[in-house]
Length: 435
Ligand SMILES: Cc1ncc(COP(=O)(O)O)c(C=O)c1O
Image 1 (tube, rainbow, N blue to C red):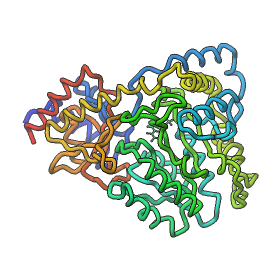
Image 2: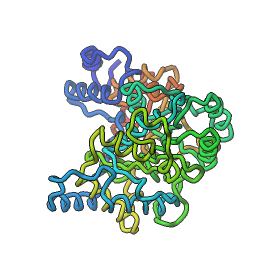
Image 3: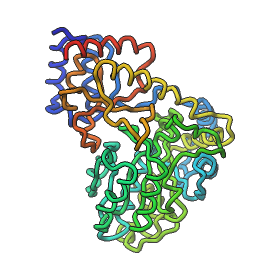
Image 4: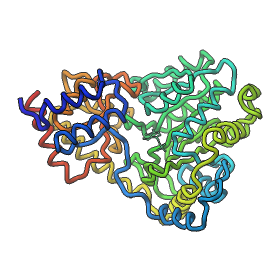
């Protein structure tokens, strides 16, 4: 049967890629494969494998960064703990958009959230002898597991699909009761499934963190992007749900990559709760000069990894946060386009026989946002990923995200333009007719 991309071209590219099982391929490996198929076939893919911003970077950030460079910040090493204006604006942002008091000292810039999670894992895993495991509430962002592998750290994980709402407590306690977990990690909204934890679920996580004295790493890469609610008005409820409302032993990761489309400058904030910031763990002295948690993060881990975060990018982020705090930059309105695209794309997929895998938040239908998950009857995720390549559509398998839904794929909406919707529909129609 004929397919939009000739079969022999896809087969040849697959052979040359050396990838035996696409279900295990990383995001960047799928990207490289798709680029090669595009080159060989001369046809453009509907690219849904990588979560890159599909919007231009926020101008207020660019202007501030240029101005900072012209003032010669490039010649000076930045303070590792961050420039004070950024720390102040981040703390204000926490107050205005999270309704949470985080002292400026605990707001620390990092080279993307990736560096923030790396530093957190390097410190959290060494706070207490015997508490050696990170607990991932999956599905999750695969690179954080990769960080564990390269650091030689241990983790446990479970797929939250069957443990939403009141079922979450017992499932978490199954792990926490063993007393070997140092940190609970999740993203909210969730990459890859786009489930969003309710305040009740976050309360459960926070209460258990207090009971079992574990830390929480809440990854807010998609801050405010549950478009069912308007979290974008400074100082006005509703606020972004967060574990910070229920425990003081947390670190939030606030990334500039998606909310401000600033991924290329690799800028984010670690926002350490006041309680955790002040905490001392004598066992830290095995690896760091001090038993202070905050000291270990800044002058232990971050100093050792990159000795600070790009000076000019810190000015960019300060300006974007300041504009958001003052209400002059509606950053959530800017990214709402992702939700609008998801509505159309989910409709197209389901019209042609696909199913949404993660489809509910407790009793509510899932939000429309940056990602959604799909399956097709009779296909494993790995087989579906391969078959879709012949139709010029790319995604990643849920397999690599810690999901137990082996039939599923993650689709990212950001790179697909509305002008491509007709082309996507034709390809999905052809897929349906052939299967
Ligand atoms: C859940 C999650 N965490 C972290 C990141 C990385 O963020 P950054 O670009 O700030 O390193 C991403 C990027 O896709 C993500 O989806």
